[in-house]
View 1 (tube, rainbow, N blue to C red):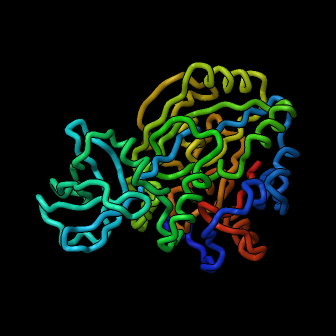
View 2: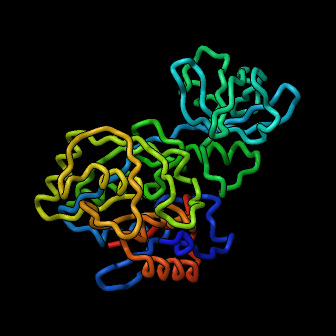
Amino acid sequence: MKTSSLNYNLPSELIAQKPAHLRTLSRLLVMDRSKNTLHDRNFPDIIEYLDPGDCLVLNDTKVIPARFFARKTTGAKLEGLFIAAHESGTWQVMLKNARKIKKEDHLIITDRQGNDFCRARAIDRTPTGQWLIEPESNDTPEQILEKIGFAPLPPYIKRSPDKQTDQSDLTRYQTVYARQTGAIAAPTAGLHFTDQLLEKIKQKGAQLAYVTLHVGAGTFKPVTADNLADHDIHSETYSLDEKNARIINDAIAKNKRIIAVGTTTVRTLETIAKQRNLTPQTGDTKLFISPPYDFKVVDAIITNFHLPKSTLLALIAAFAGLEEVQNAYKHAIQKKYRFYSYGDAMLII
């Protein structure tokens, strides 16, 4: 499959820069595959499309405040993204404006108010262009990031140095059911849910189950290969416990639908599924879902609108059909839906 077949033109003003005023104020495009129809709704209307016994599966990963700021001792400003911590005490990070950094250089990491927090030593540059740095602090990485970190927004969301906006992002770039710390990007299809909406879904008789997939920076990696199959997809860590495996399997046994909230949940379920059965497990997945693909367990998907020529759009095309998805996106653009992480949602049934 040619990567170019996943391309489309999006007016820049439709890239959502901020979330809706309230989580549930997002719009919802309902795509019915059996009837080949599109319906313009609002997100709370999703309850109308759920039946008693349906199982809504959500990704409960929690986003780390992984974005931070620093400067060189010369005063040059830097922006960093925490990727991982190593047992040696070093951090693996991505650094902007880092071309002139050398081994053993010292950086000054600043806190959320812009004050100096601690120094860090540049250890080495990795083969992928990232850096290993060693913060001079006795705190754990989690404790440090809680003092210095901001929401790791994707690059298409622009922010001025407005700390009030950044503080708001720490709340809104996180699902209300986030529990398992480890992601550096949000599972954005879940951002539209509130506790109240989830309670109404349960009152209707639908069940909730949770998986964990820690979304990594690779989720934003563009597909540069001409052929989609030549793309080296990123690896992400997932887990499913016994309780939630039982909830999902019970719904399957009763011939109820498994509705995945987000492409990360789809990737997790399809990695674990052996035909229509799931076993509790933890691991890493490099599953690349693209057309054609035979879905084992997912019957419906709630998702946001994805970037052109992305692995996420390839997954949606595999589920709903490439031509059908392209038509749905054209409709969404004509109707001025808001796109990407802070944008509106689709329900594909």
